[in-house]
Image (cartoon, rainbow over all chains, first blue to last red; front, side):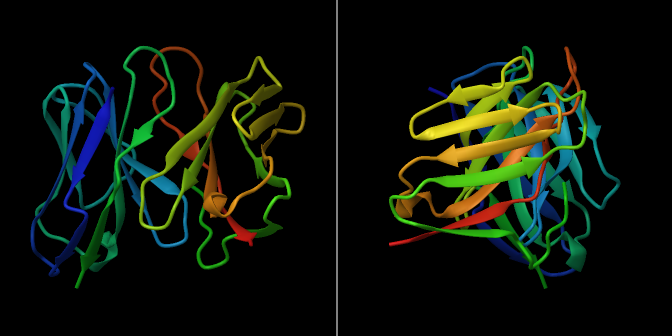
Length: 113
Length: 115
């Protein structure tokens, strides 16, 4: 069976500090990978998606970047965090052939102080 | 995604009753729809999906109805239980065919089950 791991679960970082959130998927190959952000009480906003190693598409301009160094690894980064980067970050995967449901990780609660 | 802020729509249902959660979508070209359940502090969990060539699909205690004429999606939960309390999101794939990767999420609805 497929599983998705996302860490850390919670993170408190000062303004201006760097960020690295990691997500890995097990039990599947060539998944589509996604990073979403969810502000408090709101829906999910797609930040990045990737259809293969080294292939990243950005949906919104922002202070964040994403990388996919391995087939089942997706990393969300920032060089300098802003207060507005606070939120609940979710990694997700879907099967690479055709569009099917996306499976989400448990999320990372990021608070920038 | 749509912005709800602090005014997340809320549905309160008595335990054992049926729940109906509604969702309006905007893109008539969307061909795939999903309902997710999100418990506090957790990632969304897949409940049920439906493709645009169907108007109804049933799962265990859940039914999704799709009305393409009015671009409306609903989730029916039978015999609602306390464990069903969560925020429910509908999502649509606004493109068709290969290369369509983005899910657009609708407003969440908070379901509260009264014991």
